[in-house]
Image (cartoon, rainbow, N blue to C red; front, side, top):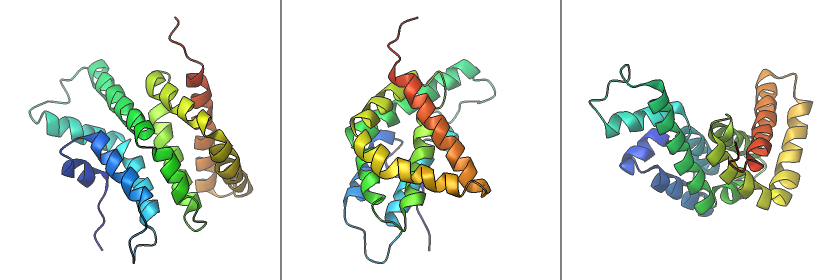
Length: 194
């Protein structure tokens, strides 16, 4: 069984990351296709992959095939990556990705995998001091839905991770969950003042 990943989806949308996010969001809202019980989990993993440096580098290479990464100044590369994160964050809000991912997390069998992928994706978009703009967008969006997001999904997810903290993978996801929400809090209060 061949699976499509984020890179293939972004290639299908001709490098339009916002369109790729929209496609995944619509697929999350649609009923699961017969015979694909893990479909929502796969979609959330694709959302996570779209925030990865690999997909960003692939986008830069496809947009400018003659570009020599060794000659590109790091600040310019980072500026492009920040713009990429901004587009994804805006797309998450515009296409209600968080709400639709939470719908997918209603399935108990996929809940942990869906929430792990969602936390990893959000962390990639907010987990740095220079990710202020996407961080502010996502933190405010998540605050509006925190009754459902926080109390119904994240709190039980965090408790389960704490119970399984002896497991390396659970401990890693728990640390990422804490870092992600710490960054969201930092960015939520940022008003652009020096």
